[in-house]
Length: 206
Image 1 (spheres, rainbow, N blue to C red):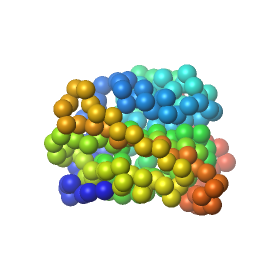
Image 2 (cartoon, helix red, strand yellow):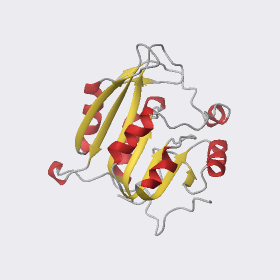
Image 3 (tube, rainbow, N blue to C red):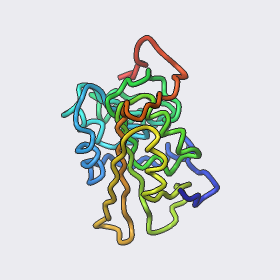
Image 4 (cartoon, rainbow, N blue to C red):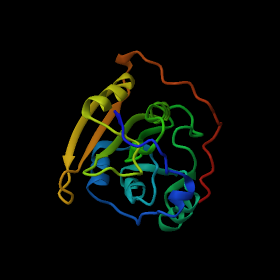
């Protein structure tokens, strides 16, 4: 894990004005393949990704969380069957193991504390999946760059890990790193304690 930018431009104001259009590409397809199926799934840092909507094919409930109010407002309009909530991906309001799967696509490299994201995902979900990009240029939005080793070192304390790297067909020199972590009793580790234990899930307001 290498720090590549010290100035963090990833604020709510920034992302309120840099909302990407809805998409469902190679990365989202791979998340769905890796996720399997179950009762509940959440995408952290969801933006306007179509993943949360398409995931309803395999999951009874699909949630999306993002810290940008304008993104969440538009996501609710675009995908009314997804349960959206505005919030911090590193400190969510959900109970332990509330989700079968938690996904964060290209979020971890934007955060001041990547470990905090992994800890929270491990707390709220039984299986966690992330992807991060190895860019062909220095993207000012990215604070960190990851290698296979650094990702495995970050995730392996929480369960069994699976890693893969997919090279971009569109951008020479760019590749996407995927890691899936399945929590296992064999590791004998308790998940981080909840900072909040609601009696019912938060109101997604949709």
